Image (cartoon, rainbow, N blue to C red; front, side, top):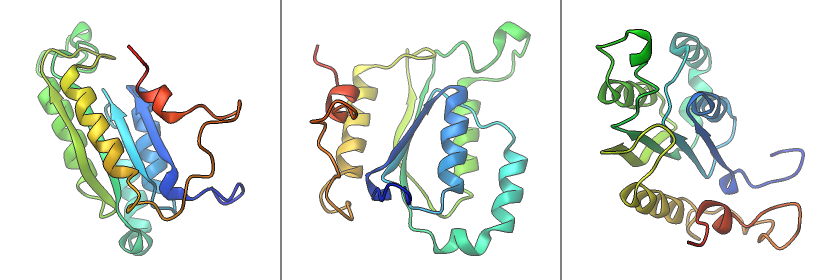
Length: 170
């Protein structure tokens, strides 16, 4: 962000499954308020480490502007509850709730969208979740939330048009 002079309000971090943990921790530790964070079908590993880090950096976190987050979980996910490894008591309701409870401890996190979507498995989505993501994206990157105009509009070969990447034509 600093080296390339990118407006952090135009940056969206996203991760799915284990990549969601990476995206979440990168966003939480970023010195910048970002445009948004999208977590898909994820869990948050090593929460104790992040809570220790947050305690050491509480003053900086208190001054940091809020970043909108979208947390998507599928109620039919058969991967994250680790059922195939004998974990019968862990449900997606508990996994999703633990992510939200953890993120609620951070003053810079604003849960602005997402949910636990019925019938959605690991890596999947639904018309409802796509509509919710679209609404989140539109709100997160609305003109009144941006602190600057986009540095590019997807018209060069190096950077894809986000609209096409997120919402491919049917």
